[in-house]
Length: 225
Image (tube, rainbow, N blue to C red; front, side, top):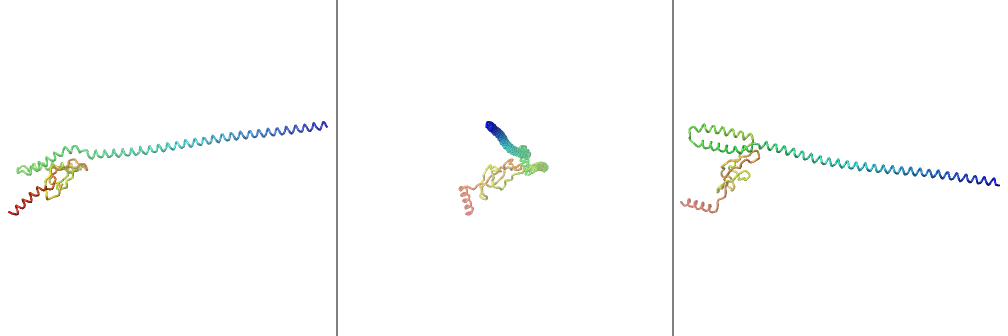
C-alpha cells in the first residue's frame, strides 16, 4: 500500500512539474510575441513619422519652387520693360537729337526767306545774282530739313488750332467763319510728330453789331447816290 501511494505522489509531482513547464513556455512565448509586436509598432510609428517628415519637406520644396518661379517671372517682366523703355528712349534721342539746333536755325531760315522776298521786290540790276545765291542756300537747308523729317506748318486758310497755331491778333471778317486763319506772319515747323514752333497767325472773328450797323448805313448811302 505504501508503495502505491508513493508512486501516485510521484506521478502527481511529475504532472505538476510538466504543467508548470508548459505554462512557463507559454508565458515566454507570449512575452516574445509582445516584444515583437511592440518593436513592430515602434518601427511602423517611426516609418509614419519619417513619411510625414518627407511629405512636409517636399511641400516646403514645392512652395520654394513656386516662390522662385514667381520671382523669376516678375524679374523677367521688369527686365523686358526696362529693355523696351531703353529702346524707346534711345529711339527718341536719335529721332529728336537735332531739335535744339533746328530751333536755333529756324530764325536764320526766316531771315533768308525775307531777304529773298526783299530782293525780288527791288529793281536792282544785280539782284538776280543775290537771288540765285539766297535760293541756293534755302534749297540746301530745305534738303537737310527733309532729311531729318522737318516739315513746315502752313496755316493759311486753315481753322485755328491752338495745338499748332499761335494767334497774335484778330480781324473782323464777314466773308469767312470765325476762328479761321486770315493771315500767317510766320510759318510753324514740326520735327516728326513734335511741334518745334507754332505758326504765328491772325484769326478771324465776327463783326460787332455796331460795325454791322455802320456798314449797313454806308451801303444805303451808296444806293441813294
